[in-house]
Structure formats: C-alpha cells, structure tokens
Figure (cartoon, rainbow, N blue to C red):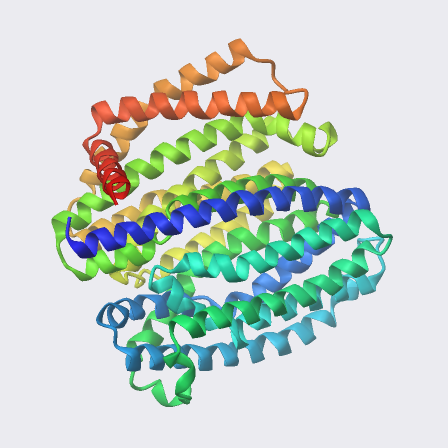
Length: 519
C-alpha cells in the first residue's frame, strides 16, 4: 500500500472511531430526550416539532447540490495544497449560500402565513408552531451564513474535527435540555431558549476549529459572485446534484407530512419513534464508514481502475455484512426496545416493521454506489431522482389513502426498488467503471446466497431460545449481544470462505491493526 493509501486509510479509520463514539453518545441522548419530550410535553408536541422540522427541510431543498458539488471540486486542490483555489471555491460556496438563505427567509415568512390552516388539526396553541419553526429556522440559517466552511474539513477527511467541535457542543445542549425538562415546569420554553443558544455556541466553536486548520480561508475576502465564470463546472454540478438530492429530501421530509395529512400528529410521533431507530442505524453505518466519500474521491483521482474496483468490492462486502446484521437485530429486537422505552402502546404492527427494514437496507446499501457516483462526479441522470421523488410522494399518498401507514411506507419502498436498487448500479457500471452490469449482479447474488441461510438459521435460533419481548433493559442487552454477535460472526466467516472481496477487506484491516500496534 502506498503512503497516500496508508494516510487515506488512517484518516478513514480515525474518522470512523470518532464518529462511532459520538454516534453512540448521540443516539443514547436522542432516545432519552425523545422519551423526556413525550413524558413531559406529550406526543402531540413531539409530532408538532417533527412537522415543523420537515417543513423547514423542504425549504432547505434550495441548498441541495452545493455542498456535494463543492466537495467534489475540493479534492484535487486539497491534495495539491492549492490554498488560492480552495479559498476561491469556498468563497463561491459562501456567496451561493447567502442567496439561498435569503430565499429561505422570504419563503418562511410566506409559509408561516398559512400556519393557521396547516395546524388547524392540532389542539395546541398556534404560537407553539410559530415558536418551534422559528428556532429551527435560526439554527438552519447559521449553516448558510457561518458554518459553510466546514465543507473543507469534510473534503480533507477531517470530519472528526467537526464532531469534536460542533456535535460535541450540540450534545451538551441536549443534556441541558433533558435536565431542564425533568427539573422545571417550563419545559417547552426552556427547549426554545436552548435551541437558540446552543446552535450559536456550536457555530462559534466550529469556526475556531476551521480557522486554526485553514487560516487562509479567513485572510482573503473574495466576492464570490466574481468567481461564477471562473468555476462554471461547479455551477453545472450543482444543477445536476440538486436533482439527485431531491429524492432523498422527499424521502426524509415528506413521509411525516403525508402521515399528518392522512392520519394524525399522534401517529406522526409513533412513526417518528421508528424513524429515530432506523435513522440511528443509518448514522451508525455512516460512522463506521465515515470519510469514505473523500477517500473514494482521492482514490478515483489516481485513475487506477483495478484498485478502484477492488476497493468498491471491499466496501460493498463490508457494508453488506454490517447492514445485514443490523437489519436482523432490528427485526428481532424492535418490539422489545419500543416496549421498554415508551410502552407497548407505541408498538406498530409487524408489516410496518418489515417495510421499514426493507427501506433501511436499501438506504444504507445505496451509499456504496452513491460514494463512487460522487467520486466520479456522475450526476447527469437527473431524470432518475425526479422519477424517484414523484413515485415516492405519489405512491405514498395514493397507497396511504387506501391502506394507511402501511401504504405510505410501501410507496417509499417501490420508488427505492426501481431507482436505487436497479438504476443506480447500472449507471455507475456503464458511465463510471465502464464494465458490464453482470459483474455487479453476480457480486450481489453471491452475497445474498451466503446471507439467506444465516438469516434463516439465526432467526429460528433466536425464536427457539428467547421469548418475543424482553421484560427489562438487562434482558434486552443480553438479547442484543446474542443477536448481533451470532449473526455477524457466522456471516463474516461464511462470506470470508466464499467471497474474495470479504477476505481482502479483512486482510486490509489486519494489516492496518498490525502496523498500528507496532507504532
């Protein structure tokens, strides 16, 4: 392995280690804070905040494409240590972000005029909806006016510094909010106050970190609008990436709104509880494989196809092992977790759980393909995300009208299967790797054939040894350990026997660990 490859691997593992630490800390805090909100403020307030967040998410759709496009263009100047180009690209990003922030502010004012109609179904005072939306809007605007320079840390495989500074400060804020909720009678007011204060403090700490690593970003004030003509490819990529990000935003932001429009705020909260679990697992996968995008981008820049495709197969195998194991754990443990966490009244039916698991699997595995599409800068298939978004929203509304929550989730599943599972790999292999898609199909079939017997065996073994729902946290922890380690060990061993890319990945990890221990 070259020195560059070693450095890339070390930074990837460092990012993964820090991300994992913050992941586990954040997920614990999020589950505790959600229970605190439900206990102290009620399910309807939690549902209201979810809707306010999703409405803001749709306004933030204007940003889609800029961050990803800028990251792609930063890989080479960061590699070459070209401070002038880095500064110019970031200044162009800042100018674009300010235009978007202006759009979001005016759109928010117009949207809030319709709040009396949008929130007429809730029994909460109308000012609750305005207050929640405004504090969330303020935190979002900080990204556009102050925090945007963090893209340099991400592209330079220093995402762990963002976690230390920004995420660390925000987690302290969550802890303070939990304490205040349980210790005072002004829970909602205190949440509003701290939701304003801690994003401000986090922005200050983050920018001090960026200034320390990249002081040149703050030394030269460049008018971003003058750089539009100098970097036309950035604007072209932004337009392409915009459409690709739409489908993801529709998936994340629209489903709670559809649930609210067809059902109720209480169902939004119950659905949100499950989304918190699936989102937590998605973030766990992201933590394990953090810095992959930047690493892949740097790898592709070296233009060695054999190494590029070899790394793709290794990432696919390692991601498949983790994703399959976590989906299995969620399948057998979710009912127990919800029962202990919030109570059996918040458990949704088994069909909903299975549909959520399918969506979780697709969304976590898609990042393998997406990382390489981003590394190659392949965003020209703008029709695909548009079709995905239309199918996602349209089918969710139609099927949700007839079949309720199950129909809403099924609409999402169908859109993911058609675009993410089928089209995206075809596009990558055709335009990026420039090889036959048959090779990908064979790779996928090998993994599925190895995983199916493991799934069948471990599910039957689990049901044979344990009851359906754990009675307390200690029992749940024991069941979790059994489910996780039994599945991942069996799957890893079987995959190492039959799949070469899994063996290469394990060998890579072994070599890195041996080198680290020697140092």
